[in-house]
Structure formats: C-alpha cells, structure tokens
Length: 225
Image 1 (cartoon, rainbow, N blue to C red):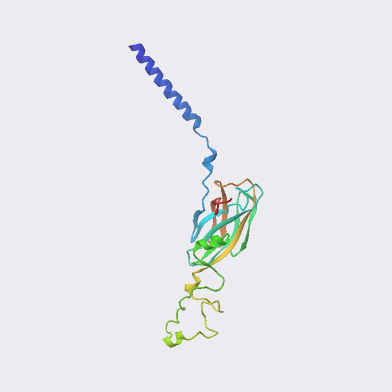
Image 2: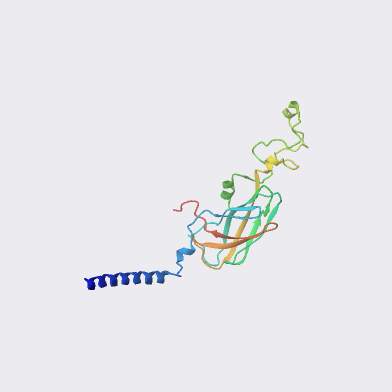
C-alpha cells in the first residue's frame, strides 16, 4: 500500500515538472502575430486641439501589399477643435528612406477639418470641400437680422455678401461646412508593408507640434474580382 502511494506521488511530480518545462520554453518568445493587427479603416490620435481620425495607409491600388522601396499614400482626417488655425508642416517615418511628399492644402482652420486622401475620404466626413460656394442656403451673417421683410424679399445688390461664392468673407454658418483636402505619400518603404501590419508616422504641426501615430494598412473599400 505504501509502495503504491509512492508511485502515485512520483507520477504527479513528473507531470508537474513537465508542465513547468513547457511554460518556460514559451516564456520570452514573441510570435509574428503579436506585432500585427487586423486590417482596419484607420486609427485615432490627438495632439493638443488637433484630432486625427481614420488615419491609415491606403490599401494598395494593385496587389495585396506594398513592396520595399514603394510609395504608400495615407488617408486621414485632421479636425481642429481649437480657436487657433494650425498647419501641417511635415510628415516623416522611421520606416521610410525619405520624408513624405505633401501636396494640396495643409492649413487646418479653427473649427474646420483637413482631409488627406481620396475623394471617398472627403465624402465620409459629411462636410463639403472648400470650393468657394455651397449648394445649401445659409442664414445671413450677424448684423443682417434687422432687415425688413420687404428688403429680404428683394434680390441682393451686386456688392452684398451672400453665401454663393461672391466676393467678401462668407458667413460663419457656411464656413463650418467647408474643409481643405490634401495628399500625403510615404516615400521609399524600407520594408514590405502588408495588411495587418503598422508603420510609425510622425505628423508635425505648426502650433500643436509633432505626434507619432502607428498607422495600419486600411482594409480594401471594394471587393476585387
């Protein structure tokens, strides 16, 4: 009876030792999937009064990923929640051989947005591009509320300020529906970039300063045949 108990105890100790050995072998190891994320439609970041939404590397136009040495366009929306205008000064990345190419609008007006990327990114914001006119009628500017009914029924004079693209500053209400659009393209990827991977990108703004964002590769917008 005593011999049988010793055998059972010995078997239990052996099993426990094997479990500890297996746990030790797995400790300290980093799998490939630990540094990858699912393909998503962008990430979120904030630096002072600027908010970056849906920030990502655009899904490649051809193929399923970017090869080393290729360029990669970005897509994001920068919202200025402050009362002071700002400007995108530069975009760099430790994962590229040169600074990103920045073109188009770079100013982020207070209370407005700057959209970086294709036309679909502009449509997704619910705002209208700043083209100097708006298809929707806007309320008159402050100070014109004292107009009499007979005056409001008459067409405005050629020198009046109206929200139809005529010379003069637009009323605040119509300005809130306008935004800028620009383009940012990463230059010379040092390594291949595939959906599920991220790349560190530094956005530097004139007033808000720099911010480093881990940008994922966006999911494809349309299924490819």
